[in-house]
Image 1 (cartoon, rainbow, N blue to C red):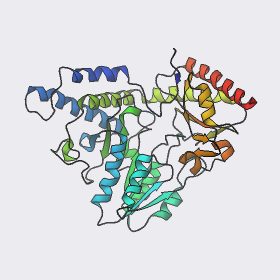
Image 2 (cartoon, rainbow, N blue to C red):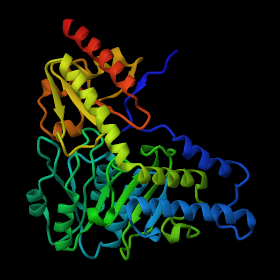
Image 3 (cartoon, one colour):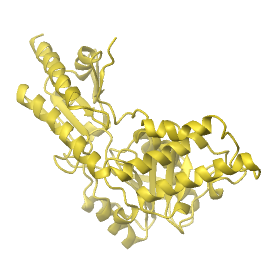
Image 4 (cartoon, helix red, strand yellow):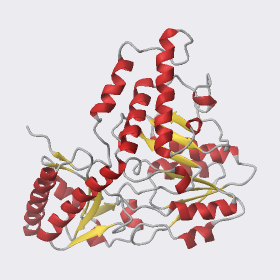
Length: 380
């Protein structure tokens, strides 16, 4: 049976063949523990440090500012909890947004049980945080702002450099969840002005279960895992060498081909949008029309149900729903809800996200499949 056309790259990415090739030795003969002083540990140790350099080059930072983790969720947890615990004597207030990933919002809610106050900033109709709202939310007790670089559902990119000017003026730590932006748009930590940045390997053609956290020196966080002092004593535990090597290679590939990748994904995304818009009416674009990830297309189909569309196209096209309809209830994603999308549009929301392996043929076939499904449902 033919595999569906994969248009869900924001959920996860396939492994790049060069990433698999780079990992292979460390799944075989180069199995040593990087902390071992004998010959078996030397190769893995060098491979981990080489990967650290590769990640640092993508972010334009010092390799000593890169800590490997088990993924984006751990990176977010370490960043937010690490600041909250380390700066308890300075304040107990964190600012985030209403459209963050649960790997941020759930951490904030957990900390609220330990005396940390959280302000959840609203967003405008295109999914952007208003700088004026951020300014007004800052208190003398504010220790951290955590705002995602680009949204996983609608692709909207936040004005992090402008946000950074505000946080720096107030002496507040700025963290960003950059899981969706790595390898899709520039992520130079100095241009962004962030103090902490989270990466997830499986969003950038590397394995699941590996990620990284950028920590700007000399910022000090509370340790996330205590033990034998690996990862410069930031995160204990024997390193996941094969996956770390894979993440390093993926970041090297992302840095080398970034502009070409951006242009290619934008062409495919816009071809998909134009193809659907030309044959279906009405369609609503969710997210910022320009300040948006080049691979992400979030559309609403009025008076239709997203799960019904996915049921119809599911064996031919893989995409994601922005709402779930059950009996007399509609569960709209928190992102679509925060943007104020009307319910008659919101319930028919789908996210399409292209990637490096997507082809023009994939897009054209997907257009035909989605158009047929939508037209069929409109007649029912």
